[in-house]
Length: 322
Image 1: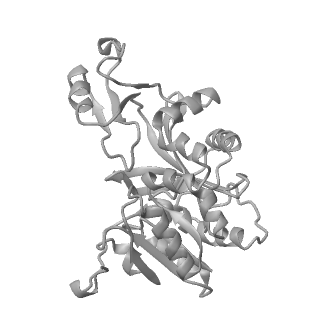
Image 2: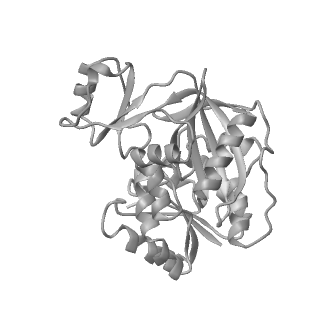
């Protein structure tokens, strides 16, 4: 079976995990619009694609899948998730499985206002969030600072800023597209890596605490196990019923856990979950092959640390993809 990872960027480890999981029975293809994306050069095969917002992006991907007999497409960045989800049926008619939930479910994660609304409607703890516009009826002087301002449609913590006062809000609001204001939380930030089957039933739920973050991605972290967080996460998943991989962000405060983001894709810190004993790529391949899967809920190594460092790939300029 051949597998395509799109918008691979720096996901070198993830490419290697999929290659190992295939055990020689197929190829891992990588695609990106940037010829200097490192993960392109550790894949079995790779190619350049238009940007995800280009009208030719989906037709290009589908044609490549036809030509290379690719049966599974795994999107890796937020902006392409709604695009692939909208065309999910088009892929399926071609015999290609996109590892993405329905468009409606993807938008619950991609649109941070919908995330807030969904969590509130399902009685799940989340910080208060409001849409900020210059002409809206918000009295900033009545808000308890500090607060967070971020884009309604955001990715990789781009545009996320802490505001200490009204002047900060007004300053950053001019720089952010469709800004939202969110209650600032004090506490440990936790990511939950989740894998569900094609009916939305959870196979694995792994909790990991962020120790240090760089550029919106965890650099150092540790696996944890908390029963109350597990129960809250299970409640969320059984309501949402997502397909494939999803990672959820939350804070552990003095008053309990508060969910802040739902990202229906591999998290950047997934390698920690992998080394804690949960091989998502291998399970995904089994799902595609319709093999029996045993739930692994809570079955992973607790207290495993991830200490990341930078490593380079060195190639001749002549070997860059064009």
